[in-house]
Image: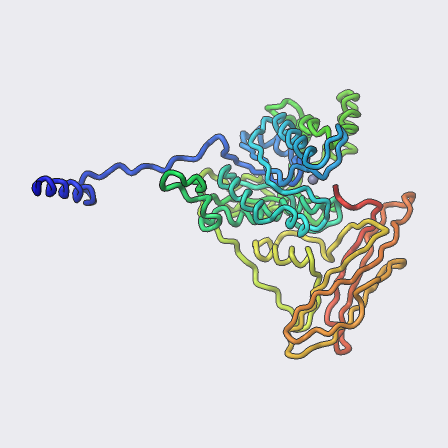
Length: 463
Ligand SMILES: [Zn+2]
């Protein structure tokens, strides 16, 4: 009996001794190659993909694998094809988006759980999207599809459609770019189950995306030119045997809820008429412009999107955070989405990202412009700060001007509300943006000025 126990002990010790009877290490199971992407496109609504489908048609010629992520199902949009609204419309639009991309041969298509939000304010969109939840979903998809490059809307406030949801897709993408390679971010995604009944651990690997490019949703694109590569859409695709713009238009035909009347009109035309209308009036023939956000693999600003990219993983790169700008002890600045974007660019090392200066916005008139302000008092005593507004003729400050006491070491929030008139009659040319200036004075001196260029429109709220 004792001898038997001794033999057992010997077997046990042998198993523990390194080198003796070494076991074969079990390799980690590898990722599912079917979902590996070279390009991940992140947009907000079904049909937003049309902003890049002409480029995607080119990328397919270059044998790039493409994944597309939609932040929402587009339930707040209009419906030209049927009665369905809200969540039901979202279900229909999901299928439209999948069909559109299937036309190009792309089926690596995903949806986050964000809710379509009719706003121009990115913060409102992020709130309604459950920012944390949708970011976690996007980080998961980056780790699952392992893209080399992300293409997304430019995060910023501009005159243009400038949908808050479009901006939100650019914000989430930038965050996911900086987080997905960090194994301590959503660690349950990168942990693997150790035993049965741990079905909550996802067994993904961290993944560092190499480059991120943006496409602006602004009317005036001059400040973005030369900040990234441009591509002609008129060349003929080797795979599709049609110009890239034409392949994009073919794909767009799936979006009946959004554009049935336009698509019906196109369906009645011959090829020459389609080419004339689509490329001269509807923008399908315009070059595609991108803005380089960041590259971790070098390459030139205007060089090809894949310049500098070689296959394989690269190490996680912590973003370079720019230092906080120096401010006088008593200062005033724009708050709301404008101050958010200033901090966002700084936190994500996007200090070269173009943004209009002075900041701008397009608004519906008649209506109200809210100018959110932050007044900082870093001095050791309270100060009386007087806010005045210099406005275009016919615009009136309704609220928020006058004298405020800001305590020592305090940052105060203020808001100036400006009543906007109706825009000038349609007979006139598109109205030039007007400048609104809010001036802050203390102790008889101007401590700061905030400027905003505002374009009045008959209709400005995005859908
Ligand atoms: Zn959209």
